[in-house]
Amino acid sequence: MADERWYNMEQLNLFIEQMKNQAIEYYKKIHAEYKVKKNEQWSIYELEHSMTKEEKLESVVNKNKVKKWVIDYSRGSYGNRESIPIYYLCRSNELYDENNEWLEESTNKKMAQEIKGYSKIETFGERVEEMMTKEFERKRISLIKRIEKKGGKIVDAIELHYGYDSGINGTIECENNIVKIETIFAGGYNIQCLHYRVLIKVINKGTKGGKNEVE
Image (cartoon, rainbow, N blue to C red; front, side, top):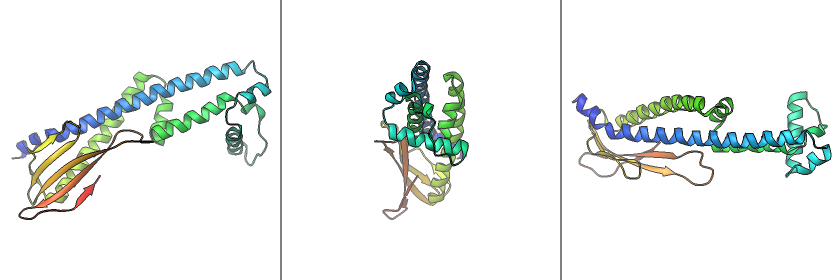
């Protein structure tokens, strides 16, 4: 029965693999976009070498925001320094701040640091695949543990299917209960990557209903 059990879990493994691959492609895309933004920043930085202080300041879009950033930077670097080094007030530094904000909104702090640390897409691709393989293996094991916590040892997962919407849905027969699995996806503004939540509904044998547990 053990062999059949894991064979029948193939659909869950397909789901986890698909979510992993989507995450990898998403972070590769963000890495590529960040590289374009950084190249733009450096191009403007090179142009600023021949500009006067007044011209640099004129190129800044949001002067108040850049002044605040410069003051914060100065305090961090030089203590409680209130004066603003005028050469920091330029478009390239404004872009630097904007690019960092965009990156953290698009990913998370940990992944943002990884993206900044790998300039070549080849080396970043290897790194993100390594990270996501570990992360989604953890998610796979966690999901199985949650199922078994609700229903007991898995007996038969043949009714589990990898849906047309790339979700994992269906029922799993466990030693104590039948567990219903349903996947919903989160999207919309400021969603960093494709997020999914797996709903687990326990159906006690001989009764109806149960409680939902959300990942």
